[in-house]
Image (cartoon, rainbow, N blue to C red; front, side, top):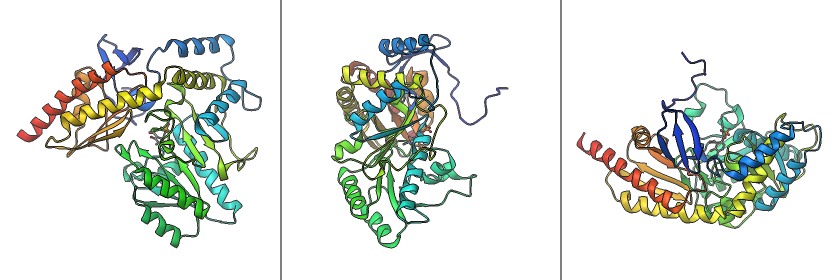
Length: 395
Ligand SMILES: Cc1ncc(COP(=O)(O)O)c(C=O)c1O
């Protein structure tokens, strides 16, 4: 019996080697990776520049010091993140939920400073913000919350893409201090916010002096063809939680702030032992540098767009497929019914994908995926999807 706690329904496959967008399992079988460890491995596997930078970091002997001291690589990483986000200050942590936890604390502090004793945050149905008590309470999924009540209070939930619902909250609830939105919901099934909705939300935040928190843990960092989804809509949020792809496999999170959220935290308000340590910061600086050098944002838009179009052409009108949607390299194929068995069929065919909310096959490839490799993903996936649909129709 394994001593690993039983928190994941795992496939019986272990990947032991990787190169580019390819993985090998213990038996030497080769797989094409269209998931990137759930949007984490931005540069794929064994990128020579990342490997070399991490090796240099190890050879320096300093993997960790402490936030009691200056950390030059942390300052360099914060500069790079300020440049790509257009924001001002970065708090480093180790995961997405920690980045969101910092965002929630910031919103509460912002409220208290404005004399609101019980600040509330508007959050969205089907959102996923993490599994700490505050972030699971902010998430819009009963599955994530069930069994962990009492939930943290101070969240008001509305449907995504419904500006009128947020306006009504604004009319009726004087405690609201922020809106927290995943511009493209990942765990929720690749649900894309309309850009005019995001702009409307931003305007409402402006009018009401609320913070706009854009959780780009999954959809951010180049995956949609711009650094961040809010850049497609053409405005700046106040708070941007990040993680996943930021260290291309080295665990790291960041809560980035500007506007009204700037300067809220003072020494002693928040912290993290590991957050921003030299190992993680080397990964961040190198990942962001390589993304620029290799023009990976353009690549994500071009190859991801091609994959979505090809999937739509092959499956879009098919009986049993409700929609093919996404932006750049964030792609969902929604079926009418549960399609979990497709993950197993894809693995058997040497393709790594994932299913979320039971019915949506999700593809989040490494941003280094080439056009030929993207075509290969589609040509491996489409026959499996058609076989699955055929079996369902016959049943
Ligand atoms: C949008 C979003 N926010 C937060 C999280 C939580 O991140 P982590 O698992 O690193 O805590 C996730 C994870 O899937 C996510 O997709």
